[in-house]
Length: 320
Image 1 (cartoon, rainbow, N blue to C red):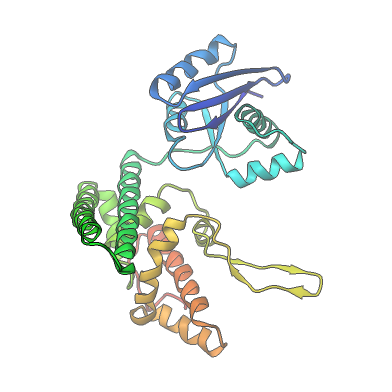
Image 2 (spheres, rainbow, N blue to C red):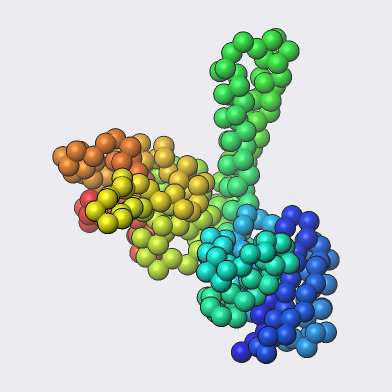
């Protein structure tokens, strides 16, 4: 058994716990920078550790540098669901909540549970992810400013400020959309996969780019796993004879769910297999938002199918 390295990632620093098979621990704090990464990699052999199994929570982009850097240095890396680590801490009656304690907890989880190794996506996929995240942030800011404008009762100076910001955001959104399209066109593999996704009625260029960035970055064994990643699988709540309402789990990529909402509305009108799905659900008395959620989930299944089979959408062989 190799040594394990628990990493608690924060914006400015990383607390690390190096745990050996005999239970001995060494701890260190390094800045969350390229210098801090190099310091950590050099520190490991100084402590008598060769290649280690490192683990860190998959929280935003703060951990990307250490995850990819340690993987490139030959170490085994696991990206861990924060909910899993939280539940593990509760199960082991962990009462202390500090960065150092969290690094210890992750190290213990690695040593006892031995989670699967993570492989970083190809560089072009990582770059696409970064561009898509930037587009999502810009669209969010645009929506916020439009909502402020729609609220009304604005003095002229505030109205002008909002219009100026909106004009800048509109231009920047168009620029990032061009960057995404150019990036995909420069990479034949991405271009082919984008065209496969765009063959699905309802999925446009923006949704295709987001799907590529998220689906290609993960190794899904089934379409259901992909739907679960997007939080589009049912969450059933039952206790004894009581049954709650079944809802979408929403445990996953909110960006992916948001990107699929408008395509689902379009698919309900223009996609043959999803129109058939709508008809069947309406006959069973399902409300409109349940049907929209089912359409979003169906789009994920179709996207997974065309990418896995490398065949464009064909309504004649898709089951509703």
